[in-house]
Amino acid sequence: MLDDLSLTPTPPSEEPVAFDLKGGVTGARRAIPIALSVCAYGLVFGVLAQQARLSLLEVLLMSGLVFAGSAQLIVLSLWAMPLPIAAILLTTLIVNLRNLLLGAAISPWFSRISSLKAYTSIFFLADENWALTMGEFAQGKRNAAFLLGSGLVLYVAWVGSTVVGRTLGDVVHDPARFGLDFVFTAVFLSLLVGLWKGKADLLPWVVAAIVAVAAACKRQGDSEPCADGKLSHLLVIQPIRTLDPASANSGESENSRLPLPEYGCDGQADLRACL
Image 1: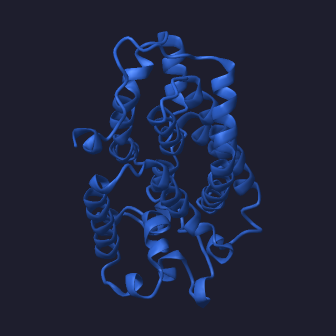
Image 2: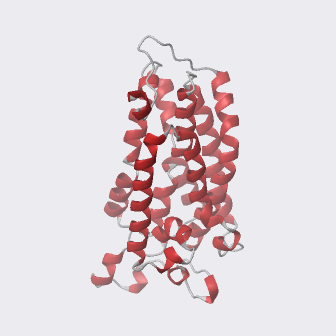
Image 3: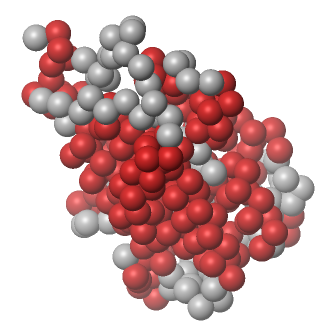
């Protein structure tokens, strides 16, 4: 009964953990299908970054050094001149706090390899390859290089696709027309399959889903988008549809902020009207 309630597999204290090329290659191969999806929402970020007037170098540095899709998308909504550095740092910190839990979950295995290998691998930690790695450990496999190999593939996919999206931003004006707005959500829904351990998971998953939907609808201001099939827009594009709302009451000049990305959703003028 207790095993069913365990959220992560716990290895015996004496069990060795490998870290070799074979594990890295296995992780890289397993990550390829997910990397294709990462490329899709990487393109979305690149397009939005171009419309927010980020340079190609800025996009490259942000994606290469931050490597956090959700945080980067949210930061775009705060992008203004002068940059609200404190708000950006605080937002990034809050969004990425989940990495503390991800790191704690894999620590029983990574504490058994050298610090250089462990921290190098952790730099490439993402939600997707964390889920894949935990699935491997749950099956009794003990090769920590799996995380590094899968992370490298996702890293290349993310950085490369954001740069391509920034370069082609003038061509792809509306990612939603190509279904790219739903890719971010679809990837995480597919990862849930590998994390399912039994009926004990059902209650927390249902609660999490209800909270996510309720929060998305409340942010939108009404329930209409949830009823007419635009929920994916709420979960993916909504965080970047507005700039800092506090500026509305701060007396800040309209010219001091960068314009919102312009789309063409259903004949509307900008992204705020798309949802």
